[in-house]
Length: 478
Image (tube, rainbow, N blue to C red; front, side, top):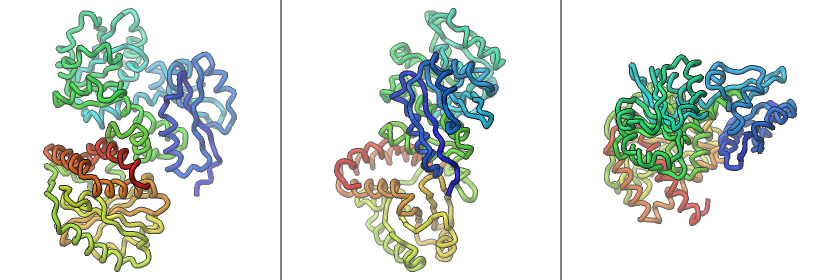
């Protein structure tokens, strides 16, 4: 168990009651086993930030800074990262052993992460970008675009005289920009010639422009509530890629968590907590790097259409045979075995893979169950200690198995939350043909698309799953 003394952190700003940062960092502390660590909200304006930060005791490890205090945070800090200095603002203050405060701008990570994952953006030689607006978020966007290799940016503003911060930021980044007055901008041409567009302007300001902005192949709309925004709808209708401010929030929090705790961020746990709190409105995909880190063996792209079959009445018998094999192999170490996933729901079309939930005393004690399961044809494929201590083993027909199986291993305590979700989803679909048929239609639609990895397909189903779980929550016991 960790021996770290309890520490404190908080998000500060005004207003701050709406902040989702406590959800993210609370999930991180819990997943990392940092018992006693707390994260809170503190109402504080820019003028009050220096006095507040100076008054905090040695138990404080860091502060997340939201508006209007980001410029004040940079000025207050004793030392700052190069990117915070370039942006001219800091959203992260970290207590140093000396007692001084270090400033960073992880908002840049937010822009980069959102565009790479949700937006699917890959660097394009000589790429041009467009940023709408010239406020603080626009400066972080410029730094993010520069990191992604964008060579020049058009910044569209209502009042060019108020673009000084953006111009100064671009100069520090050595990023060529041109300032375009909003009143004379050719939005269609700007977006059509851009590799990426970042919108930091209010939704009402661009409502009549969304069809023009959707000409860009990748768009980051920092607005995400209410969802979907008119810009997001237009981009999706035009077959473009959309990233959102919620993706930004998630990805900026990873580096922030690592600076607060000194440990790798439990990305999946943080993502799942944010997704649950926001009702699953967005899939919030994670990076291929995260997939690679949790996958044992080569991360081979699926790169073909997902195969969805009509419900096969033989699936329950396949599961029953596999349950018998697992139970015989593990004996009392198998605390519980359940048929889960789509093949466990009569009448639901599915990939022909039997998903099985296995509970063991301690998934981290792989020597207690993996070698035995390997003897009956399983291989350990996924290890996720930061996501409910999950392990996944599999059997595949290409290696001699009679059918394909994914075996998900959890412990009754550490995996309680995800176990409950899996069983609640299964039980609800078994009882509710309306939601079962709706889920089937979504699966079939998504299966018509090509996916690099099966996990990308799974992420795309998240919004629908969360909506169904919300309905199930009020009707089924957890």
